[in-house]
Image (cartoon, rainbow over all chains, first blue to last red; front, side):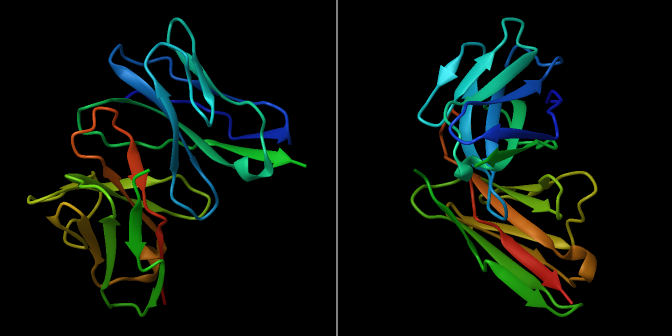
Length: 111
Length: 117
């Protein structure tokens, strides 16, 4: 599975959009980009995933660059409850399905 | 959505004892479950893949005789930390795949905090 690089931490004002970047320059053509988040002392929570098209669901939007070497997770209106560590993971779906977590980004939403 | 539970949520034990942690998929069947360990302020580290009806697959560096995994049914996997020592104190998290799902989304349990005295 390809390695990902994320900034260790970010701040965001409550009510504003949070844009979390992820670099995955070695991604292969059959690897998906997944985003999970982990609120303190809880299990990770699935957010969204995509292959090459931009995706949107009730939680967030995922923007993947045309060359697929990077992506951005967008939380459109961050709330205090969105404070968490966000993990960007790339892997081949349908293989072993195991997730290898990197160091993630600690997003702190400020009031 | 699919729910994964873990029991117990926290456990304190004496050094040298064994501790069993259960992971259950409550409303779906899971052919495959995963066990992770997380130390304070660190990321999740995959320990092993638990396969229903067969032996678990351990990640490199994880001692299979120390961390015993049993996946006897499609809804239950157990992790037993044998002869626990203080360095085994950690947050243990399991996850489960929705059997037959092509999406590959994993559902995580709430975690079990183990403290070995």
